[in-house]
Image 1 (cartoon, helix red, strand yellow):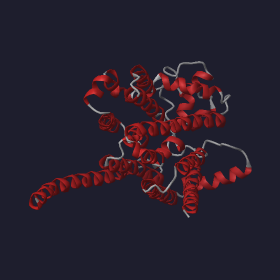
Image 2 (spheres, rainbow, N blue to C red; image 1 turned 90 degrees about the vertical axis):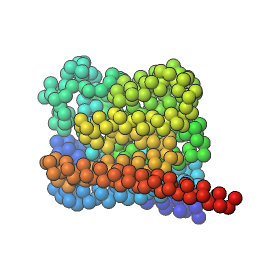
Image 3 (cartoon, rainbow, N blue to C red; image 1 turned 180 degrees about the vertical axis):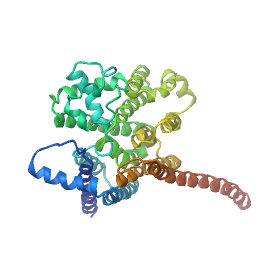
Image 4 (cartoon, helix red, strand yellow; image 1 turned 30 degrees about the vertical axis):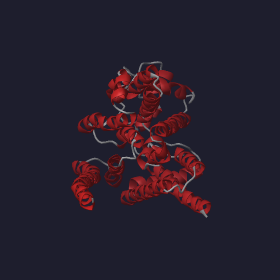
Length: 402
């Protein structure tokens, strides 16, 4: 009976993910043609009509998919908590989910196209992307569907080194290079799942599967790591390896090297350097689980600066969610992390509906982001207040009974 239920549940879930994959092609750039095949062209034209010329329906479809994914997210968490899924079933569902989402178009961000061209500047033009930019190559057809063509390479050197082999293996073909890059992101996403499992299995063995599910099936993670992937995925991977080897295995040199590699992708994780420069002293004073909790809260510091000076882009929260998964047995962390994930994905709705960013749309986006997080914050505070108020009563009842 359990196997039948799991089979039906998985089939419905994979259908929802497939709908997300199909929907992703509604956001394909109008200057981009992935294939000249007549069947594909019919498919693409129908979805472009939905995404660009029937925006209210498009926004409604996206909203429905996101809400459904979060419902399934909670159901999976609940099922694993009650040991409803075996280890084999869980890993199988994760693998199938990744395979389905790998087929998607990077719908919600143009960043991956910039990643492709940054590497292309090296592999095709033999130039330095720290000085050269896409706008310097107007004859290159790839610039037709790129955004931010005026900027030079803004990331750390490690990220560029990671992408170069996958650019070379694209042999100058756009679709093949795009597939290569998506494969690169998928590998690191799976690596993140592996190290989250390994870390929690050492720190809190009873919660290992729940922590894995908390990260693996988070809709924001699935979208921003596989559908429209960002290099925060790699930053998180090397941060997790630093935690595992540096703090848990006590291989301190390996820990700091991995952290420096993580910071060499996009600099943000450099904030954790003190944890790995003085690991012996820190571990002596505080146990590892408390260190992980501190690291979770510390991540809000760079996030606040990124939000103030830019926007709360959903992919900024990948590292926070990854760290949150390590301590997701703590109710406050769990609730806050899920509310941020939900709120960040809601920000896409106004743009999908209107197709531009006038001031009133930006205001809508801010409210959609702030609302769920504020509600979660109020709920956490109320829970803390009520628990404090009930504590003296419990003590009083103990004294009376004695």
